[in-house]
Image (tube, rainbow, N blue to C red; front, top):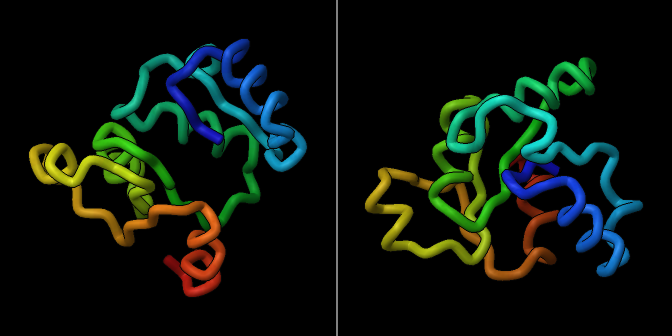
Length: 110
């Protein structure tokens, strides 16, 4: 997970939703120098997961889309505001409205 939120808030929410065990790595604003849309967070991910060969950014905002573009990664929009995406020139590889829609896209190489 790569988020502009603070670590303490992110971990709290992940634990409250019982999602924390599902993430191998959580990168927050406390870990990188520049916030999204800068791709610096992905630099940190690559440093911590050097064997990473494939990645995709799933996000709910244009900021995530621009960060994905800057990191040269595919972007999947999750309930994102279409007008804001268009206003910032973000064209997602796919759009989803439920996270359960994500696995088939990943299996298809989104």
